[in-house]
Image (cartoon, rainbow, N blue to C red; front, top):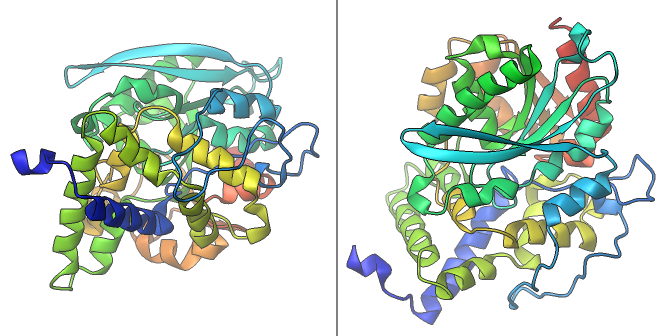
Length: 399
């Protein structure tokens, strides 16, 4: 309504900034995708968090607008990862009357890839988050080897695909489910075989939903720290018996959405205020990384650039719950409590194990294995070799 479009007072803007940064402390990686990709010439076992960089400058404070981004951080990190030269392809489809166009990168497998059952192509699907990027999966794809094609992309509206959706109201769970159903079918046709899917966070549940209607397009799924609700929704659900907090969260979500939709430069300034080193570092230390020594200035700056670069709509949608597959656990359990359409495994970081055991019991009770590796919500960033070993072992059993 008209009130939601009024400029916010300075004090309200500061409170908005504080609360949204606080909310990122629980789910910023979901979904706070932490990038990896090794900096050459660092040893292959080192992740971005320990890499030295001559291409990023660390200098913004929590009170400064982020410095201008002069390079495409997503492509820069793909190149730095050593994953090789991929082929960037385009996929177009229509979902609910909305035309969608995304790109995806294919890194070819070995010479025997087309003839080996073990060489099913693997889609690495980045999660929608405040710092989304297909490059977050580069180290894991490297660690899983090159015997089969690796496909890296994001959902529409995120990362290199962020120009696909240019209004907040476009971010709807039904759109992402419809898109993945068509994208899975497209990849099955392109490669002539069912694909393996590696995904994380919100995108993992979208994949679970999409494959229910087209199980022949997907061979198996390896879901890393899957979640069905975002940061503010999580706060609301934890305080559902509180007489005040849920209403305050709803009001906060409305305020964030209204602030983000203010005309430029106000709306862009609101987003810029959320992309500080302090908020990124806080989330990384809270639950995204297990080892605080990996939260280096370089890792913080790369993820700050993931947050700052590109359109702001998808990041706002994540913050306010527009991208939540299932805001209520009971809905997620009802949708998947009877089992999964294809062989599925869940992989979680040890730091978050107890949380995921409780949240995902409706999957594990139906026989979905839960594999625990070192790390937290970005275990595939911090410990890509361990996660790769678990994924390869699981996929090999599905031949």
